[in-house]
Length: 443
Ligand SMILES: [Fe+2]
Image 1: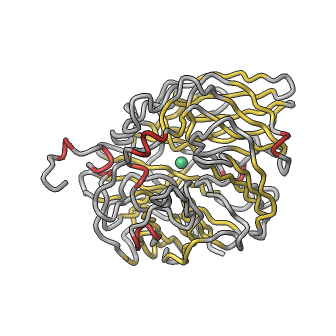
Image 2 (image 1 turned 30 degrees about the vertical axis):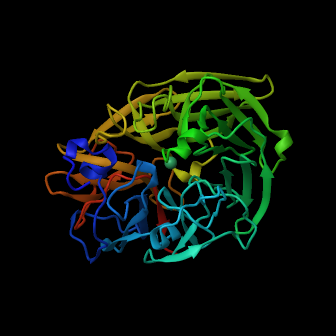
């Protein structure tokens, strides 16, 4: 790798996609502007950072979490830490040479989510890894032995019940299993969901009454696995369907609704409206027909599912290429007016360029350019207070400042989206472009 010219490296090892070499602890970080004093907690984001400096695919590098603790109008610390998985520590793979699978092994590089007093680093091949308050790794968690599958990196927390809904998918049967965890953290339901084959199922959605699964035609391909390549690719023959199940229901109750073939990594949200389900997503018209290195653009797209009639209507609502869609998490499964995302003309591999804020019903969009050479990652909405309305709060996320060769934690006013950042926390290092994070309020 050292002898390769930068242009010969795959995108995920170049520029601000490249891993950082050091774990850093820095206290009392410099702040430009004013940090809102109500921001008391931890912003933490996960992403791949291969320990060896290289990985065959963007999705397979060791997880590294980057966190900033905010309190009393100060940025009291920044820490970046590898998730010390058995991949990191022992060089293991979650699939053994005999094809057996060990869910205690995984790169834990995709998301970081708090629930019932635990902080989970997640990757969809494996069990969650628990992290401590200073981002130290505590170990794998299988819900007291109740979890027998992998756990998606995109569990859904229900703002009404405190439940956590999630699923695990696999390349061997059972291909898809749904799980429900109560507000206290106890896994109370596991339900096999029958699907025709082993697809890559990255995310899903909940509403007040239902769970929505996405069985889309990016299919496990053993020949690729044998070659040591990323083992999923587009299938023209698999078809595409959305599955609607009552929350807490049985696998046999899932209604499958055919849609145009496409791929979705991430929904914005889903909600019930007049007996139908609205599902807003970042939709790829196609993904990985020719290998899994590149990413074509994804667009804001609205599905309206009518399970009673067995039909789905769908519509592209905007022509900007987007990813990392988010909504106010307090509206998870509930009607949502606003969505936020990172926009990018060329898909992954180029730098994200700006943030966008959508009126989801219409696709009306406002763009925020953070300035020359400043590239955002995913931003999350932190409510301004317990009774704050939707969009009343702060958008928090990392942005890479090319001129400084380092990243900032930016705090934006969600309602006054186009204005300058409210605060800019200067970090001492780069935060590579990664995947997902969340705000963990101080208790
Ligand atoms: Fe994701």
